[in-house]
Image (cartoon, rainbow, N blue to C red; front, side, top):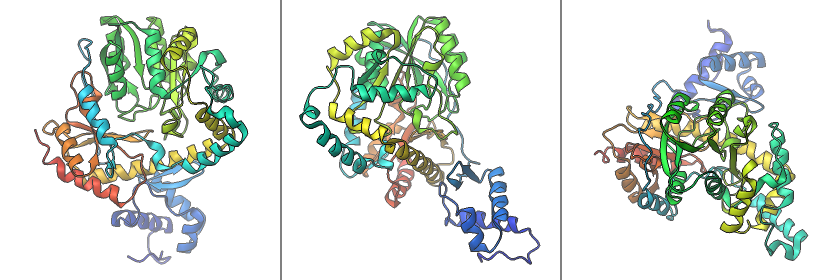
Length: 480
């Protein structure tokens, strides 16, 4: 194929540019998620005008082949003609006690094995590492803080960092008092404290289905019962199912990913989040919002935290820097609202305080503007990785596989079909140097045996693509 655009061709020039992009895509020269040449660069290469290229790109966007991203340019999209979303599951009939400890331990062990391709760990920061920036920042903090850096910090958190977080919530119109905000050791501790504030032994907790397995294990450890509410792969929890569950069961609290869900990657729109809060507060049910992926959205705007819609103070917000800056720093937070006194007591009992040097470093990182700049780059990289992973999965996996289309975060949810066993595939993959997460641990009621979660939060390279091809080969050995 010639890359020269012919002005004697009977097709309009913009149509020839469109065909060129299609040809590059079909040949694999231009891969899903990759950025198209800029308008100016493409115009210069093809000796056509910038408006001609712009019209071609806009026409391809209208056809769903490319996507315009604000201040970033145009990107090739995955062709989703064969992409089927995961099916809706039935509402659970009754709450259940949870017992997933053994398999979850196996998954964690696999994640940390050396030299495996880590599809099994949701660590988006690995796609755009912050180690060098944070090292510079920590050295600066050490020189400023001196011996204070190795001391215990305040029980509820480093005051300047809390102030930074409070300012960030003001962007959503959410006013947070300093005493209501408790810095925690990651979001997991924040979730644990929130659950202890809102529940007692034996209470029924509504969770998403599928649900992040860390929450399921937490519910198990606290002696609570889980009731699974089906999740729409597009926009979060099915509110009609939730309403029915509220009528049928004495639910004390709900733990939901209020923005970007893990593992499906659905995005709950603001109006639905508002309806969720209104529904729960009408029944005096506490909402514990897990908002750790909120800043990793692929949508034009970030979802407004559910905290903004609370009228009764029954929303507790949990988040952290683990998915956006530094997972090893273990710095999260809880907005406890009316539960603040209880939350501070539990924090003191559980861990006394959170690493001062890590909090101080993250405060400087945010205050300098480096955090926001890196966050923007991270979202772009993850979005590109998502497109590439979906394209690779479509090439390597059975045509019957149902693949989610995440609107943020760093993971894809794949339903392989009822004849496949994800636990068997987990073992086969690990033997071949690949870690994955079996869908079975994302349910308290033994659902999703045919599903897997794969992370695209990693540096993308040929080894990653070869691992996906290998998984496609192993799937056929993982039949029940």
